[in-house]
Length: 541
Image (cartoon, helix red, strand yellow):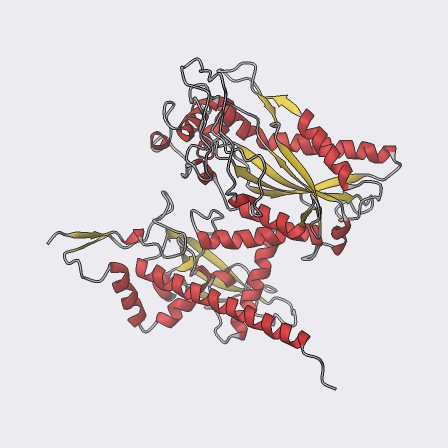
């Protein structure tokens, strides 16, 4: 009978996941060579062994905060409980006394391809962060509802002809799942050829998801160097564009006898199939209080959303600059926006060409968890040992882009291109905002941690000392009465590894997390149903 190789790390334990991404870290158990095909798989055996242990309930509570994570961080070290008033160490404990001898902390990765659970949490946080800047709440004044706001999409210029899906008149309700019949890709009667002999024509009507989309008609004609340089300077181009639009609006305000204004923004970056970055930007108009510049105040009544659209359009079509000199291009590369852009107003209830606040917040949050997957390339930061696996000046389109970034980055002044070669030159954050636009991710995480601490006290299962939810900010005070903090747990922890000890542990933890999510969902539906019944039932006489 042939020997069966059971690769434990290939088990998909959460929806939409496969084997761990390269460089993420795998489970610590070794691969199993099973001499019998019918023998139970390794993850089943390790799961049964864990459940049979007397400390299983305590272990499950211990890993609860990281239970849905595919690659949690394992930390070991000591924990000290300190009196915040006197500095006295009240208690000292080592992680060796905890289940598995470590603390499990969710990886917190924002990318769905790396960890779907952590990316979903990040996406939900991003949604509330963006929407709070439109409708208020979470320390943002409700008056922002009345501020004029627009949603803009700015794209990169052309670096060469690529295969596209051209739908002239889309009738689909959901544009992201368009099934309309597309026009021919590049239809020309003369069918010319490039200097390399490649025909610059394509009669195909590409379907959504076609692997050819975004690939150059002639890879040798495509300007891969300009492409990665543009990605690298896209953040600076946006900074100059916003600055120009804000100056134009302030000039308009002076002409109309109004006070100064400013633009507060939230921005998400997205990769097109060709590998070029484009930005989805939310712009809100704010006033400026001379006595309190950090306050969010209403803008003067004389500036409208149409004025913002005109200012952003002017900036997007006029702002351009040239990069510094490079040994391969002494006159630098021109950096400017492409000719395709869209700017639309935002309202609390969408009507006409306007967008509603929920759609905009969901849109930005959705793209905040994506990366280079649309281009067909995913990797961690590249080194001299790994660059040959992903880069080739004569390979596929993504391989040529990576090779161009790596080669240009040899010059010390352009070292950033080599650092971000795995991101095709783009080194910015995928979700950014102005300081005064809204709350921060940190404040949202603090609020969630406080809620979980209160929930732990109320459900009768207090977290063990040193639990991830209590390691950073641990309150012995009553959370309901908001009394003063009296103790703080300080961790002296070091990295012990990434991933679960066994795939059986991962199976149990992920299953418990999925069941908890399902219970929460069912509870919310039941509460909504009861509330609807109470509103529809007339009051008794």
